[in-house]
Image 1 (tube, helix red, strand yellow):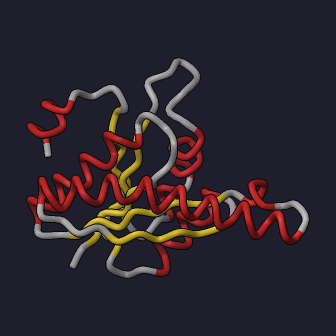
Image 2: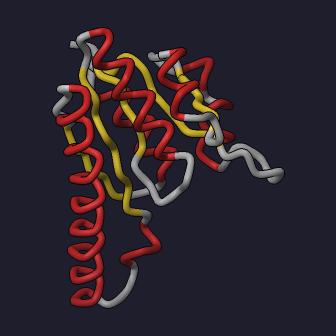
Image 3: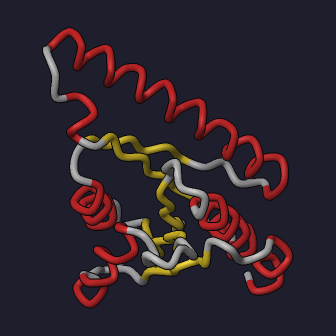
Length: 151
């Protein structure tokens, strides 16, 4: 089964990327893999504090994931898979794409801010020529209705 890999983070544009991945997966009998990355700077403290911060980050991710997972199951019949990795976001995304042969498309949300589409979109489009899968970039300010009509 082909999976749409989408990155779960705290950005506003993440919502549209999730919507698009769920809609495309439902229409193509695919799956959705949701990847969340805990950056290394979040847990580089004393050992006990680092373990606690890592556990709290995982709990926060799992709670956030459950909101999207419930919506995908209820609205689209998709049961997404959660993957949590720790490290540099760009490196971890590329590693996940390369390690899971079922990932067929990387879906990223692009910010509509004047400062640019966001650090992940900027970094990963530089690597696009050497990726084993295509990247779909979903505009962060695209309406829900427009997303539904094009997916």
